Image 1 (tube, rainbow, N blue to C red):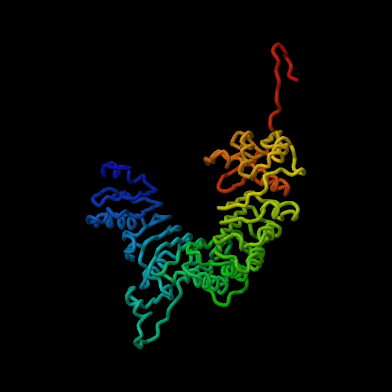
Image 2 (cartoon, rainbow, N blue to C red):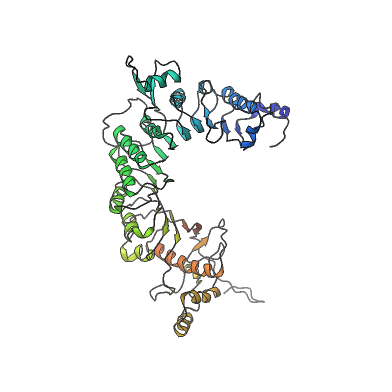
Length: 508
């Protein structure tokens, strides 16, 4: 909404339960929302630079007032600091007291050094279950060691960093026993953020973006040392593109070793239900190795979780030729519980359909529901249809089978190049949301625009994909996403053609 009178908002203020601002929504001179005090969810995004060309005291006061007056009833808070880029806001401890029901907390663009972030999290440790921290600066190693004798953050920081002799203080590690989902990023100025993993003994889902290789190694050590037995999902976003298969393999190995008795851990009586002692391993893996060094080790660590693994997403950032042809088959032939399999690569330089075809054996994942594959550059196979391939599609639809023999004779006679031979495919209809190929339809949400030659290649490749999947007899497969375009499978048989002649009362 824009330009709504404050009186109108205040009139309905007691009905508002969810409040989500948009960029530039907080006008520095806006005086509404005084009586909004029954919120359950509050989302305050970053305001643009134009807000800070003038006095922004009203904007800051409005944000702080909304947080404080709704603290008792808030269940979800996403607060982008009222600072600007590279000038993060400082935490005010009075903004983070009184929370009794807060289960979701997202903080973005704050300065959390000098013990500030540790004190904020300590205030909400009794309720928060989902914690997301992005661009929190000033977090140095040891920042999550609390000194209960310190009166404020400054004395805590002085006690931790001063070199002057003093009486030893008893520090305690921050404990977040209820946090089951943790997401954070590591920037150049907050290398100590990785230590937050060791503060969450009942963690189930972990997603982080490392800044350097040492960050991933530290997380792996903490996972194993603290014995995070409940960890079921691991996502590593390799935005800096500095992690290879070795670091990813170490993380996967640590997740498996975490099921053993920890050497040191946070003692807590809180147990997170939902996972028994059996079934060791991760349910979801999402990793992005930049280089596939020692790919055999990475495959073996993925297969370690075969008994529990349901979703596997691999984003290979480097050149694809460094990966041997049997990399993907080793995973598909051993991870028998996979339901979602996703691979994104830069380049494919071998025939994927032969590597994953029936000649190599049946896939172990008979319950696969989604198969997702994407490549920037793809090796185009020979544009010919083997004699062993079926002439007729399922449901009687043949986008390429018509005129196949004529095309072969024409190609052999004219000896055309690959680029020119694609012109012949323009005579055949491509797959669409209403025209199926081998029982597959293009999803109605797919709005890709391709040239005629691209459509011809798409039809050829898709038929090879469909045959590959059909040969594996994946009866539960529902969705195929090929190079970003979704296709859905239909098990509804096509209606037979009905011929009616004028004057007849029967249908042959």
